[in-house]
Length: 324
Image (cartoon, rainbow, N blue to C red):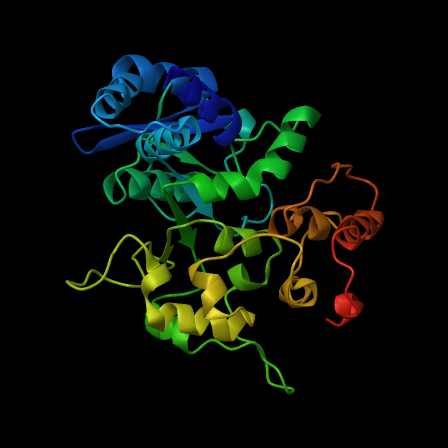
């Protein structure tokens, strides 16, 4: 149990997380590393002891089965929320170098980067019961090339391992507003939330097992219902149907996506309708979608996409590879 516990934190969880605490109605967050996470769950939450006690009562003989079951229990206990959103312009986001070593109080007010991060942390804690959370704005030290490289290559896995992905649609008021949106084909003017046309949000849509959509005022697009899992919108036919219409992604993939180098033209078609600020990111944001490994080298320009296709062609030999 101890080995699986330590290996999971080192290999399957983000390098840094926000630790969220609540005192009465005041919520605070602090940027922490994997050592803090390890000590918190091992010393304060006694997670390894709890799992060991549970498995001491079972009769799993096969070592591989036993380790898989332990890993699933570890993942369930070490839960964190992860953020999906569009970045604000003009460096308004809360970045890694803005994070203090001491806890920061979650602010109230209109949206700037700090307020948006605060809403995310409050939602993660109050609605989804997560003590830890991850946001790409502040949980990556982009001055470290090795940390940036690991983060980009691991990001699909971090989203998949999250307890819930909180998706913030800043240009969508509510579900009725989402229903009115359209891509703008056939000469029509597009009216679509920018979240649906950004490169990185493709994997953020597909990777998590649970995703919850929030509108511009931070109210959930799908409200509570007696016959519906409020914390996960994947099972809601209304919102998944509309997202399928806006993205051309089949509802089967929206409900349960498996990465890999199959159906390459279809996946490249999904990506072709999206844009990234850095030209290299259109390749890097697809690493997890195709489940391949690619060196990160900002400054290489279009060559990043050529290298992506080279890796895909090593595994996909069908003639339709460029029919997208």
